Length: 410
Ligand code: 3PG
Image 1: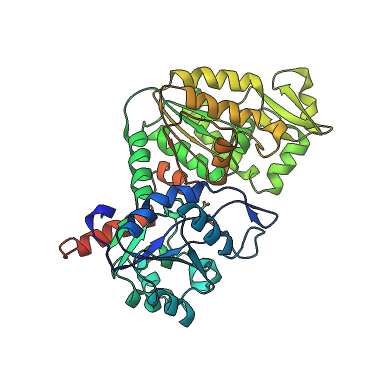
Image 2: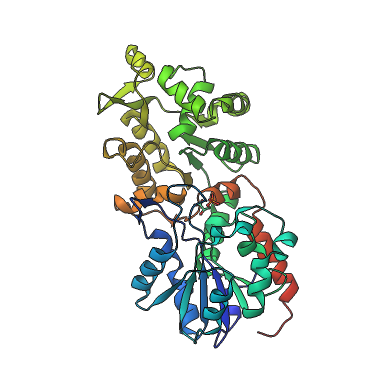
């Protein structure tokens, strides 16, 4: 795959596909983590005299955090210390005019790519190549740099469509992510511990199945909704309220799959021994084996309990490789952040080589100033796909582009 340093960019127009999709509350972006992560690539291009066309998606149509990229332009401009013009267009005449008007060392950001219908579907590379998006912009572009690791599991025009038309190059973040994740995935230093939490239960089950079956994990610690599904699969009752919640969110059907994983790998999948429920607005910890477990009936589980954190901590301190994705609970509520913060802190303090990701949930790492994690991945779903052993369309496209253009002059 091409690296950023394989080319020079003086006076070249570079289409930089980043993933600046960020959490939004009350109409404002609440974390600049993904912006900071792409700064080294943008700085490299600008310092080298490139004309940089930045593009990102933000959420999906009709969702509450689906916005324009106006604030993205402001944040990038502030972090870079130079203007990043917000172009309220994607592939139309206005966008093409602003791209043509760029001077070396200048940057613009296009409108939210998912305002364009073509960018909302997942299509194979060949079809992405034929979209109006690619056909309108390709004649204006010299190189494509892809730094959107967090969207690497998506096959959409801006992510893969240029691969056979232009040299498509890994950005610095993309390279760092691939290096760190591959190191964790391929290592045979033991013990290798995977911590699976959050709400993406089916993705996490795919990871568990893959890393256990391929002998890449020695132990799996579970939390969040993943932990609840495995707890049910072990035959424990989590009460009507919690079971209804899992049912409403379409997760209850996954218990059977979790059971199958346990049939094969029972001793290697650990589940919480206690949970924290919201009892009349306060955190209350309930032991799974105690008589108090009837409290699960009426009170929602929002975190793992402190005994679980202690047990997980001991295991993590002895690990050599740690891969963690997703929070242990609803860390956005201060009373229920203890599980996530406790586990992430233990990962930071462990001497293991550690990779932690989970899309928006990595915000908790910054909010609680957790240090010592070897690599904080910007990827949520992309990271899970990687550890599930799946092919990531963006990595495939980078390889195709390399094969196509490797003999060309730089
Ligand atoms: C993410 O946050 O996981 C990426 O930005 C991908 O977003 P998507 O799941 O909406 O494609």
